[in-house]
Image (tube, rainbow, N blue to C red; front, side, top):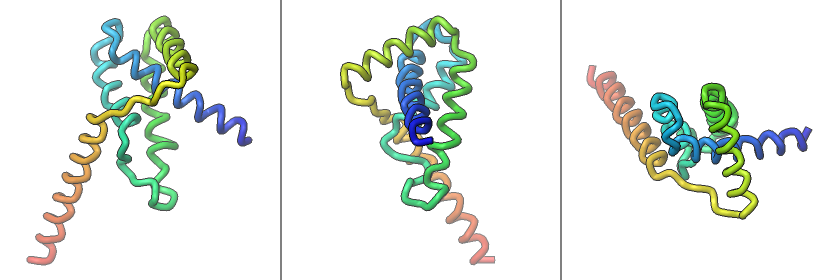
Length: 130
């Protein structure tokens, strides 16, 4: 079972990197690039939407949201472009290069946190006042 999980995690890592290459390629359809930028930015963000220190739910984004987004991207990616991008990702990993980071992804997560905090504060302040 552990071997299967390690294999799955390695495929997720490789496919995340492959899609990072694919969204930068002009042959990728525009709508898929836009969706891909959001998914890859979040996947490569140094900050999680749901912090991992929260029991159980802290890993939901890594276990459900990220694989679902990657699956969607892979499903609609042109096969030849996906194969080429996976090859580039395999070479990147074999060379031991650092995983790319996404400042955009971190900014998106921070904006979401601020928006949710503002929304909760406004709800609680209305409830307390009324």
